[in-house]
Amino acid sequence: MHSLAKAWLVIAAAVVAALHVGKLPPALPALQADLGLTLVQSGFLLSMVQMAGMLTAILVGSLSDRLGLKRAMIAGMILLALASALGSRVHDAGALMVLRALEGMGFLWVALPAPALLRRLVPPERMARLLGVWSAYTPLGTALALLVGPLFIPWAGWSAWWDLFAALSALMVLWLYRALPPDAPSATPMPGIGRALAATLGRPGPWLVSSMFCVYSAQWLAMMGFLPSIYAEAGISGALLGVLTAAAAAANILGNVASGRLVHAGCSAHWLLWSGYAAMALGSAIAFSSATEGWPWLRYAGVLLFSSVGGLVPATLFSLAVRLAPSEQQIATSVGWVQQWSAMGQFFGPPLVAWVAVQAGGWQWTHGVMGSLCALGAVLAWATSRHLAHGRSP
Image 1: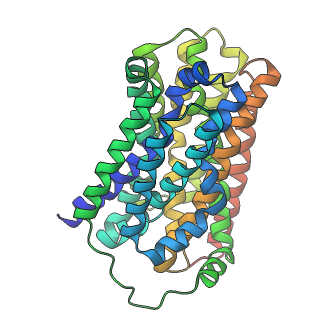
Image 2: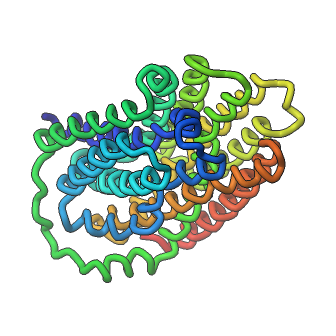
């Protein structure tokens, strides 16, 4: 198998892992009917998959550097398969939340080694573009789940939906084992975990990148996670519901891929970040403001603007995370810190938006939450540009 084909397999594995994140939103109406979930409980169920990342991502990243990137990715895929298979057999909200947390751990073990694996498999001149494609794994996996779920779940049920992703993960385990090269021993001694964490956390760059990812991910999962429920309340269901929500998630891929090309072409990172956050603020205002209440397609255009141009943010941040890693041996550790803050945003974002919606009696104040987060992201992007301009990063 050619090195570039192996790189695409790494990206495909990340997409399969992201399917487990995206499988819940289209199943929420069925789960609410079956388990009697409230809106706030649904928000925590959406975000529970991020619990492991919020608590342990940087440690998992550091451990994957030592375990071996291939072995770490396969271990994560096995955990995803087992947790999803067990989840299909429980009918208790608490047990399902625990298994979603385990799926979050499996997701980490798959996603965090990926940038370092890509760096080993492809020449440096292709790295920025491939990172742009790889950073789209979450919206692509989410879009596929949102597209198929509204058609599959009414026909087979949410339990079979969980079994489907367990089977896909098991097949990916076999493919990764056969196709990826064995983990080679490091040419230089690996630093201890404590030293690796201190080297990463002792620099301001990883903190800035991680904070910006937190404010981005909090908004994106809240928007995409509640879209099926919002449309269902508006009387939209079936194939149209799936197409609308999947297209909104898939639009994010455009920004991710464009960012990879623009970074490769030398475009300034802070301009890409400012553009992404500005589009998210404007898009959420169009989508949720009471001024657009009678214009459903204008609101949907706001969702597309939010997702597509907002996609400039994650790819740019992943590129910065790789660039600001203390060494090549600690790329997974640095990406783990970014993922930890991303998970924190995704954990608190949906429940916060749900709480605001309950207090306001509707979704009309959602754009206020998202606009505030975008303003914070813009300030952090400015601070990062100052940090880079003063040559304080490697």
